[in-house]
Structures are given as structure tokens and as C-alpha cells.
Length: 290
Image (tube, rainbow, N blue to C red; front, side):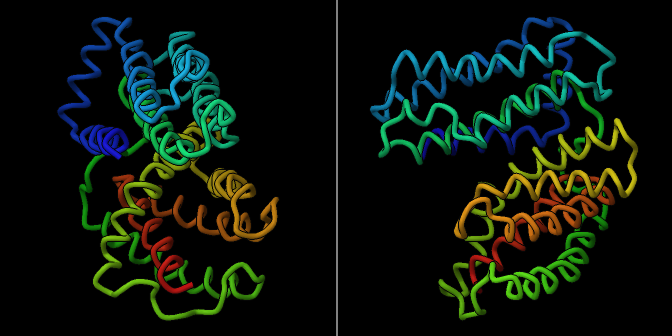
């Protein structure tokens, strides 16, 4: 898992405000540098695919098209830096939906699909940060380290409200099995939390809170309707997830409620790490006790 690990290091490294500022300055001085992101990430994916015995010209071309499409949406038309526009949402959807529906899976041998999906996931998140955090400098992404004690207190309060509601409702509608002792030793739960935080919670918060919710609130106002809409989008993204039959409306209901609370924590905090830490805590409890 060297390549996913490398991509994770890049994602975490971009939390540095000084690095963000240097990269933005470079792109402002030479706009063509925006193309470095998609080309480099396509090359990384191609190397990973060939090393996994799944490389092909068709797959390489598909990935290059996947990375260039949202890049072109972000590049044109040029507008006020930092202000959300409709082409930004087009770019976000071009990043998200092909992964959501496993585009190109038929080009990858089954033994390599899990690994290359992880690589593609990492490529998508790094490209999202490159395009919208660096090149577009979109306001409100909050991709930075915590700046206030509230960034710690907000997820704690969110967990206290959300966890019992999700547990009770999940048991009532048959989504969750009965509570049981942890799958693993107590000492291993913190490690599982870190894995979930890095592999699931942070990437999903970048997409659904930092980009989608942020875009909706910039365009339609930071009000409850926008929060509900963003939560509903997050919920709908779970319709094609197991373990129940698809479309998984039980998962959608619970994910919508979770998305609303994650979104409120994101809204009230100065760092995306607040909603990501709450997200990871909820998923860890589900993994360990249900």
C-alpha cells in the first residue's frame, strides 16, 4: 500500500498553511501549472496499475481523462478566486461520480480492484485539494489545523447528540445488529479510529463538507435549508452501500442524519478536522460494537 500511503502524506501535508500559500502563489504566477496536478496524479495511478499487473493503455487514458475533466472545469471560465461558481460544482461532480459508480472497473482484473480503488480514491482527494484549495482558493474549505478549543469541543458535543440517536434508530429500522462486545481488543480500537479517520472520514469530509456543503452554502446561504440539502446529498451517496439490499434506504436515512450533524459541526468549527474526527468516532463505534 505504498502509493495510497504516499497520497495520504500529500493530503496531510496540505494542511500546512505556508505550503498552501506557496503553491497558490506559484499557480497565480503561472496558470499553466494547474495541469501539473492531473498529469502527475495520472502518472502515479498508471505506475500503481502496471505494478499491480493491471496496467493498460485503455485504463491509463481513462484515468487521464478523469483527472483532466474536473481540471478543465476549474480552469474555465476564469472568475473571482475563492468565490463558488457553477463550474466548480461541475468539477466536484466529475471527481465524485465516476468513483461512486466504479467507472472503469471492468478494465481492472478482479484481484487488483481493491488496491487500485484505494489508489483512485487517493488520487481524487489530492486532485480535489489541488483544484479547489490551491488553484481556485475556494473560501470556506477550512482545510487547516484546529485554531480554537471549539474545534475539539464541537465534535464531542456532536457525538453526545448523534451517537444515541443513530444507535436507537439504527436498531429500530433493522440497519444495526444488536450491540455486542468489541470485535478487537480495546487497545486496538484507537488504531482502528486512526485508520477510519485517514481512509474514510477525512476524505469524505473534504468532499461532502469542505466542497459540496461549502459550495451549497456559498450559493444559497448558510442556513438550515442548505445544511439539510447537503446532509441529504451525503445520505443519498450511501444508497449503493451494503450490507442490506440496494438501494439501501436504511443507510441513507442514518447517513442523512449523520451528515446534518457533521455539517453543523463543520459550520461551527474553524477546521475540517472537527467534523472528520466526529465522523471517525461514529464509524469506529459502529465497527467496534455493532
